[in-house]
Length: 260
Length: 270
Image 1: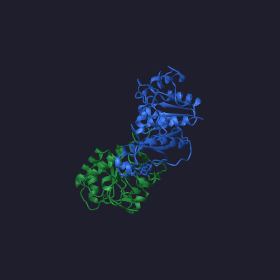
Image 2: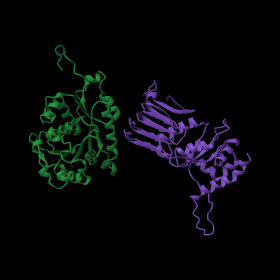
Image 3: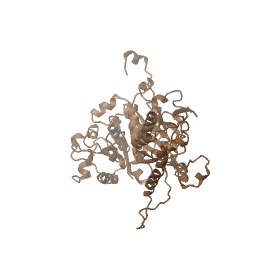
Image 4: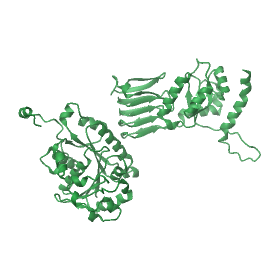
């Protein structure tokens, strides 16, 4: 306990100067650095619970869906929905993340024990975004964090058929396709996916981890559908909802498909 | 203004060259000055199907390289006026086709012809890309089976994104679906995809359905475009397709299995 508290400030300082380095453009000959505020868009990894195996599996599935999206990607670990687990091995978790190209830089939310453990692992705490905390409203970091989902929303609407071999990605927003999506085509979105036509290819919504993302289509004939890394392949989809209008969403980590 | 029509498919062996020969010949028979260009450098077949393999002196690649002029390389068809063939080289490979070279030859052909039919090689490599790059219309030849349909779908995606019209943002290439080797009896038995299934997957307008027919094979072997065999159902189906390509409204034929009479059933005739 004692060591932990003692360690805290130094850890924090190191991290701060690290993050500031990029934006530092000081030309002052005397000072060797200058602190500046800046906004950056970051991915949030919302943790529900942690154990090595399931985290590893889920991460590997998410990353394999979109390998190019995670390369030295800084992420903030949100602990707001992880209230039941008191001990989390953040050092192990951090190593796992880095293995897949994500670099945890801070934690958000969480109880005291969790925050302490995070600090020991070199992860500072950011003010919670949705806790109604008055202080958070005014700090710049929070604005940054809050801005993630709305600031760069860029929805995409496609009106021509998406053919085998084609790939369409709506980065930072929803993808709406008003045409068939052929087998062998791949459509991806950070947000939701709507297909007003038969969906015969692969559809991946919430590819950056948005578990609230959904998929809607007029006729389910897909090779694969995935939301935030939880997926089902054609073989699992060929039930009574096959070739029906459906919506898909996540319930826990289960992909749930129901008629529209 | 001359029109460039590419006959393409992605998959090999579905009937691109047969279709190129038939459509080119059909257009010429209707009085349009037509040239069929073989883009399958290294595996040239068009001259065989057209029965002019013994008259090939210079070829497409020779013209591109400036080793011969167009008039020396073009082979006039002996059966149909207004029709000529530009054969591919058998000794070179597809890299001999450069975009500038192809454009130069096509531009020159455009001055003296109404229709330029480009017979594309299979695949999605250079030869196929060059055949489609300058096209105004595309005839996508598809067999009623899943792998052929998938490959056609891929080709349609490329037609929309990697051709001159797409790159320049002009009106997209007009796409036409030609279903070949269609056997209504096998469709009824569930062994083959039906017209509706294929149309549904590819969602482009149907130019024609060519029934599976022995006359296609024997015509190829005789070096005779099958469209000249006006007795055969395949020949008639191609004639219909050519008229549709020119904008005529012709009803589709040969979509249903013929009812077998008692006699043919007894003697097992087809």
